[in-house]
Length: 228
Image (cartoon, rainbow, N blue to C red):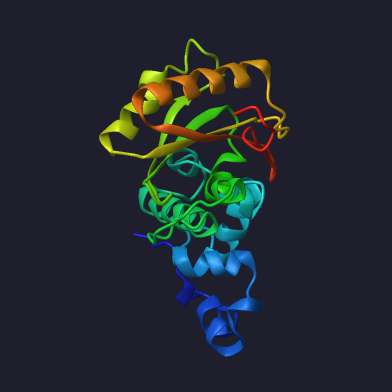
């Protein structure tokens, strides 16, 4: 039975791992770095060629890091094991870039909250509403997606927004949602939702600190705009 090609099937001077030890990781291409992680190619393609094609098919490194498990498995040469490796790599990258490394993360200004969610939310193709839950010292204790799809007051129910916050004994929350257009300008519906949730928070005893609208690398804080 013909075996899949591995890194060791490449000429020694073309093996990414050996090149990394000799010249340093910063000299390797994206495809070579990916080849070190995935290790094996297919029966027809060595791992560097497969990695190159994978990056091209996904629209570049940024596209690669935002693909789902199912999307990876639909690509030529990617089975369950490689798909799992790629999703794990993607998730670690997102956690690093958004500071979700497992350490305590304190929010002292809108920018802190925006940095916390930006890398995930800026690339969503549909609107997501996310709740950041904080303790009395404004340290993040949990984060949860509440809804996916176009936001309106009939879909975004306060019960869903505050349910997990109550369970986590949150002192306050920040809500964030993205605009797939990349323009974070708030709509009238965004403002209505914010005011409704603010009033509910007062009754429940969990303060709504801010509502962030995430665009493509930019954001708007409704608190800073004086709307909240």
